[in-house]
Amino acid sequence: MKAIIRALIGFLALSVCLVLAAPSAAARTTPAAPGAVTAARAAVAEDLPAWPVISQGMAGQPVRSLQYLLNARGAWLAVDGIFGAKTDAAVRTFQGAHGLVVDGIVGSKTWRSLIITVQRGSVGSAVKAVQDQANFRGGRGEGPPVLVVDGVFGPKTQQWVAAFQGAAGLVPDGIVGPLTWQALIGGLFSG
Image (cartoon, rainbow, N blue to C red; front, side, top):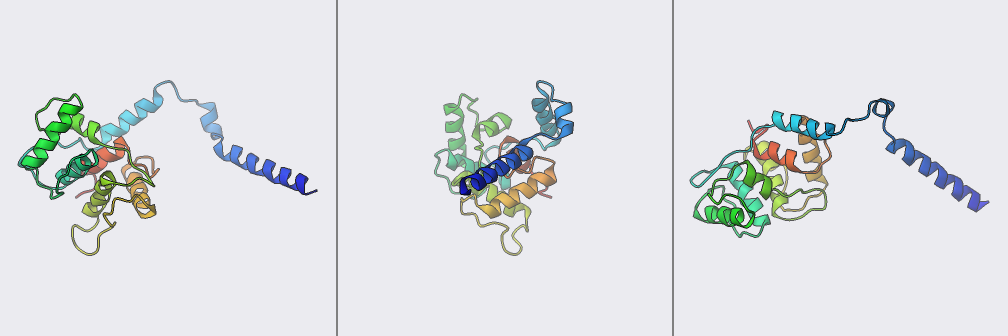
């Protein structure tokens, strides 16, 4: 009798999983054309702010994210938001190591090579860049920070990312991939 009950519970659980995983009726009747997902992503990317172009002598939030991301790639920079000689040297080293034009100018190609997809469970300087971006948008130094910049992608960071993505018109999956990075670093909702 216990075996039958276990089998029924297992069958019920499997049925629920299949129903939840199945696409909606509308999705089943209108399959996506080849390349439709890529085209949809390209359309969303067009609506996002452009990657900023930054270079030595500049200061501010995009530079802070740059410094965190360079640190995630092995640099040892102080994250001060100032694009000085050390940040310039780290950019040039990164560009040379990744087959980019070595000019010290951080534009879309360098940003795309530099970003690291992060999500719940990720740790390190790339996560700190996300958390720092959240704080940049959430109070501008007035009051407590939105997130602790500890480099640990936990539930609070995931919740903030998903809310940001939803407001930006992105899939609110809580994963910081290329489109979310572009929205963050490009300054979306930064006032």
